[in-house]
Amino acid sequence: MTTTHPPRDADDAELAEFGYRPELKRTLGTFHTFAAGISYISILTGTFQLFYFGYGGGGPAYWWSWPMVFGGQFMVALCFAELAARYPVAGSVYNWSKKIGNPHLGWLAGWMMLIASIVSIAAVALAYQLTLPQISDAFQLVGDGTGKYDVATNAVILAAVLILFTTLVNAFGVKLMARINTAGVFIELIATVVLIVLFAVHITRGPQVVMETNDTGAGYGAGYLGAFLVASLASAYVMYGFDTAASLGEESLDPTRNAPRAIIRAIVASFVLGGLVLLLALMSVSSLKGERLSTDGLQYIVLDVLGSTAGKAMLWCVLIAVTVCALAVHTAAVRLAFAMARDNNLPASSKLAKCHPRFHTPVLPTVIIGILALAILVVNIRQPQIFTVVTSIGIIMIYLAYLGVTAPMLVARLRGRWQPAGDGRFSLGRWGLLVNALAVLWGLGMTINLIWPRASVYNASAPFHWYLQWGAVLFVGVIAGGGFAYYWFVQRHRTGVLAEHRSQSAAEAEGDRLEHR
Image 1: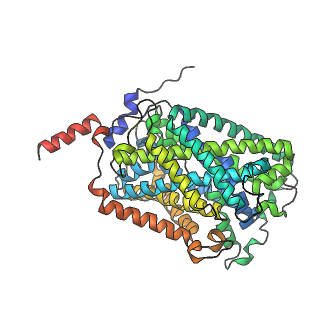
Image 2: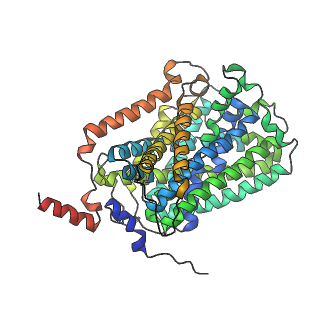
Image 3: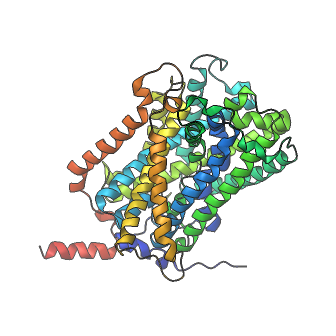
C-alpha cells in the first residue's frame, strides 16, 4: 500500500503566514511525529522517576492524581491539536503565543519554555541514577551510595553522559534522531505492555488498594488533600511535552493532519498505559509497607515482583525510555531556540538560527543547550534534593509557558478572532470555548499548586534554608522578570524575521516598505 502526501509546497504554505522560508528538511512520517510526542511524555521515564515521591507523599491513593492530571492536560492537548492543525511550525508554543497573542507575550512564553526545556533535559537525565545502580552496583561510581552526597554526585556524572549523547545525536540531524527515537519508542511501548501483563499475572490484592492513604495526610492542615496535592507532582511531571509533535512540523510530511493526531494519541496512550503500570504495580508488590517504595520506587517493585533476572531486563528497557525521552526534550528545545533566533529574539540570533548545510539542523543551539543543561547539574552537584527541586522548577515553567498559549487563545475566542483550520482538519468546533476555558483554569490551578513553597517539596531534608523552600518562586520570578526586562529594554527593538530566513513574499513586502518610506 502506498501512502501519499500532499505536495511539499502545501506543507510549507503555513510558514508564509509567519514570513519564513522552509529550511529544515522534511523527512518525518506519521509514526515519527507520534514518536516525538510520546517519547517526550515517556511513560516509563516519568512513572519510574517520580513514583517514589508520589507514593511517599500520598500513599497508594496518589494514583488518583494520574487521571486528574490527564483530564486537565487533555484539555490543553486538545487546544494544541487545534493550533497544530493551523500552525505546524518549529517552536510551537512560542510561535502560537506570538500569533494569537502578541510579540511580547510570545517572547515570554518562548523564553519560559526554552529555560524549562533546558531544565527538563537535566531533570530527565537524572533518571539514570534511579535505574542504573539498581541494575548493577558498578554504576554507582561515587562512593557506595550511602554517603551524604554519593547519590546526587553520581547522578550528575551519569546524567552528563546522557546529555553528551543527546547533544551529539541532535547535532547530526533530525534523520538520525528520528531513527533512534522511533526504535526507542517501539521498544518502550512493547516493554510497557509486557510489564503490564507481568504485573497482572502477579497481583496479590484488588484495585481497592488505591483507596489507601498510609496516613500521609496527618501532617497537613487540610488533611489528605494537602498530601495529595503534593504527591500529584509525580503525575504532573509525566504528562507534558506533547506539543513536540507540532514543533517538528517543519520537518514532517503533511503536518497539519499528522501533528494533531500525534498530540492526542500520545497523551491518550500515555494515560492508559501509564495508569495501568501504576495500578498493577500497587496490586502486585509483595508489601505496601516497605520503606523502599518511598525511596527506590517502581524500580524496587519491578525487582520485587519479577525477580532479579527479568526485573533487570525490564530496567534496561526503562533506561532506553529515559534515553529517548532526553533526546526528544533536547530536540524540542533546539527547535524552539531556532524559532526564536530566526525572529532575531535571542542574542547572536543569526548564528543560532543557522542550519548546517549537510545535516540541515541548527548545530550551535544544540551544543549550547547541552552545555547549559550540564551547568544546571553541576550547580546542584552537592544538593541531596536535586531530583525533586530540578524537576519541580522545570514543570512549573512548562505550565506557565502553556498558559502563555491557552490564555490568549481563550481571549481570541471570546473576541471572535480565532479561526480554526478548515479543509476537514482538526477543530474543536462548538466545544472550543469550554475546552479552552477548562485548559486555562487547570493551568492556573496546577501552577499555584506546583510553585507553592512547601518544605516537603523544596526543602524536605537538611540543610534547611528559607531560600531553598522558596527556591521555585525565586527562580521562576528571576527567569520571568529578568527575561521580560531584557526583552522590553533590549530585544524588542531588534525583533523581526532575519533577512536570510524570510520567505520570498515577506522579503518583497519588506523591500516595498523600505522603498516607500
